[in-house]
Image (cartoon, rainbow, N blue to C red; front, side, top):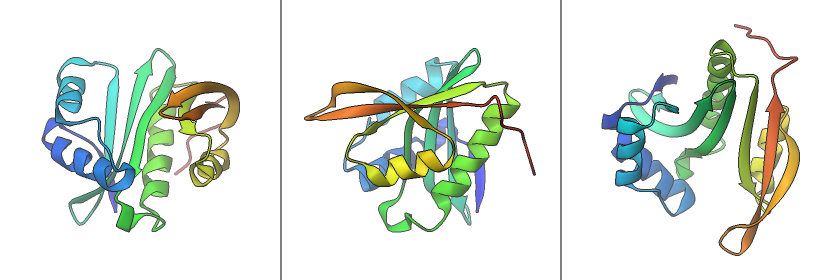
Length: 150
């Protein structure tokens, strides 16, 4: 299992992961524009034997990172891929000087909420009707007490 920075050639894999995990995708055009025109976009892929299993997208502006998407193939969930990817990215963000991170999650997604809370993300505020027929909860993590360990 390894994590690497995603490249434009990984877009098909990223879209496939989204469709498997989320039953929807932002689509090829969105990701193509992200890779080609957004200097703040950072995408990472976790692989097993060279095959993409999961990805995370983060926008970094100044010292803040916003997690845009995070998904693992449905059949590969709960096997440590997401944890490995997330921990790698948290260390990467620290090394880039990121001091805080944020994300939105469906209010009903207790599995994801529990996962993020394990890593020190705390509930900040509610975004009513952010998703179709559902509120989003915004979680924030401050890195003031974190450090990079091997």
